[in-house]
Image (cartoon, rainbow, N blue to C red; front, top):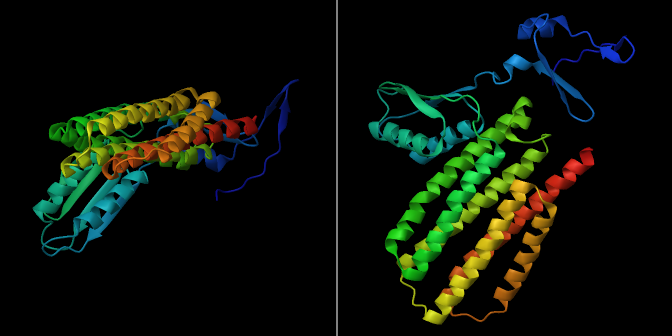
Length: 334
């Protein structure tokens, strides 16, 4: 908890008020007369900060000590590196007290960061250390921009994944599987931006939100899109099982796939427009879609695909519910 200082409000002129700021705050943040000060309204409180230091929230530095003799558990280390990235670390240093870090470990870590951590780059590499640093210190995409990128990639994956299943195209299926890392990359980027906003209130409006409680809703929306992309991958992987499905069933799967995609597209629209009517329509369409499929008698192999379509629709409905939660939350704040 920050230091509490009580000051009396002073009246200036007929309709204005002033507040004397604590000297220690002035000295610590190196501000003075005529410097711009940002005042943010949070319903029942005001937050004051130097306007010029909006993006200088400091540098979060994490040093990870590794006990390496020959080979290290890459998955264990990679989880820690990604966790540090999500937590907002600007500098991540891995160091061993052994003679050297295995080259294979360093190569795997560089590939991992290159694939999943937007903005992190290798800035130092030695026999016993490797250091990653964030080159871009502030998110260049707001929440809508992140959702847009994730949606466009995942929609392409769904269309190609369904096509690969219908046409039994191994090449298309492989393309979908490879594209999943792009969705994951923007998902992690979005979670990092949300976590930064939770720690630094100046980022809230910058990424598109009014108060910290909305960030939980934002995380849920991103997770739903990430899971929808995973189901596109799962549909594509069915191609390699060489399932035997007759033409009539394939046509049914194709038709239901288009219905699921329409529901997903409406969910995306509800996010972009923050529209309650669209969000409610998504939920209603999902309920009808799931109900109709549950009453349809299918062959065993067809059920595997339809289950993925149901999950895609249900995650879309989750997005719709998130938007309603967001709208209600903002209405309460008025």
